[in-house]
Image (cartoon, rainbow, N blue to C red; front, side):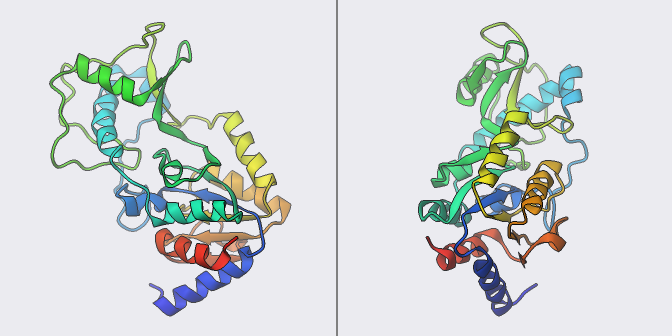
Length: 278
């Protein structure tokens, strides 16, 4: 673990790289851990033996029922989570003109909650639900109300262990009714990218546009295990713009970075906001 002096020196080096640049930001689960949402990987992360894949969701009704029970219970807790100082630091840097926008792999909506206005939620959002048949989009709150009307027995337990996607492992799914689409009666799915599912091309085009409007890239809170994040890094490398990485653990792109900061995103991003300014 780095000492405070070593961490301050790393933050100074990163600020020197970013100062004077219009910086695009890529974030992962690590930026939300200080808000109480667990990370997928790294120290303290909980291993998920069987994450939901799109193939299982579409083809296994029992698995789909388990997903909706756990997803509803977790979502009720998810909505009480608040942005932390790392999210707020990036929003402040956007207001100061130092940050052009944020591409996030997270589905928690905390960047928007912190005040960032240019946010690309590349893996989707827990706020919306989409019909896979007619493509109608619904507010998650409305779907949540329907779930509770159809399943009046469902309650949020006092002690609940939440996963990074905002779901939990339910104790029982017996008798649970999944609400159908109110437009066509089709299958509903939260507007998030499941394992085995492609990021919508339009979302990635928007993230590329944001990157092209910038002349530096700051990556925070991701080990870059997921290919969507690596694609953003590769675009930055091709353009030859400076790259700064902030993460507790090593990442797949450390060798490509102009500066690497081994620390927590809340402390580091707050430090960068104070040093880089507008």
